[in-house]
Image (cartoon, rainbow over all chains, first blue to last red; front, side):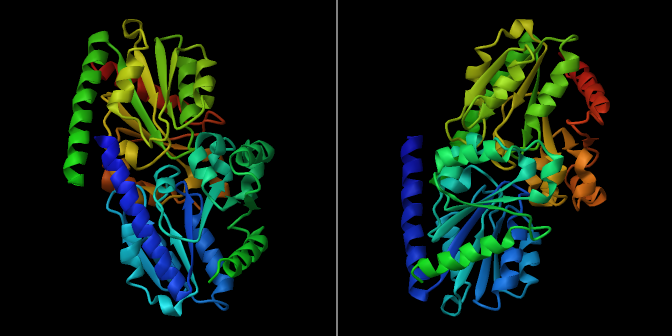
Length: 218
Length: 218
């Protein structure tokens, strides 16, 4: 009984995700779903990405949080349209929430949409939103064992950022052990060691983003 | 429809949680549910707690993870009975999982049971397990805004550990802002700034654990 209800939920979500994707494709918008643990640096990566790109392309952000508009406020301060989704307790965004957010944006005047999912390494991996790429942000203080412990999340993404590299020396983090775990789950995954604080590694990430958007068929 | 199914799930879980609590009470075992983000230091706090207490009381641990036995192995290395629950994808422990774990332990020979929940600041807060106390571990690198963003979790716990205080200087973490958020949600919450790495602050935490176990009626 419980399983069949869940299957219905996922199947309904998948259909809505496809419809979201069609709306983005028709408007020529490239969508990115950003996922991470709480505090790994999702909002920092978004503001670091918006800052240099906003002169090139029209960007908007959708920000998912259980409560508060703290992150949306930080992003909106960069002068891009930002839609806040307060999930009211739900531990992930789903395609229906994103559908409502899309209707608040003028998609025909956008080229890039960045979605900040709820801080969680489990549930967001199970709910498609209809975006073109999924990106995971790991961070050094979380520990090098996370790929081994959260395989579904690591398996399902198109790129991996390892944030907070500026504090690597202060933690027992074995980058090789971390990468071996990632490679076993998702061979050849695009990998970007980075510090959103110092800006280290940001150039390679931005180059990838530009290339993927062109490749994305938008 | 979906809501009524969820209500049934929660109500069934609450009943099982009460039954778990009765089993612990009858055996004189004090149960603690430990929750945190991925990588905040749950396993480190458990091993730091077991090390000095194992001479005083008989301890066991239940370790919940999506995948792997990495954490359970670290805990079992301290010579205490450890039951691993692999949730197989579920983002939290529930009372039924704990019920199965309890039947693998010789409760009559235990005094303290520490349960390590899945790394997640959302879902574990919604599922009671039947423990006597709930403890949340925050950590400095996660950021000082977490109480504001995950209010349900912060509201529902009996004690709060702030781990990784040894790297405070490397992060923009305002301890006063963090505590104001905590106090607004959970006034007077027992608060333990700590470093599981250096051992700083561990003495106050252990004193609280001893006092609570006595007060817990076991």
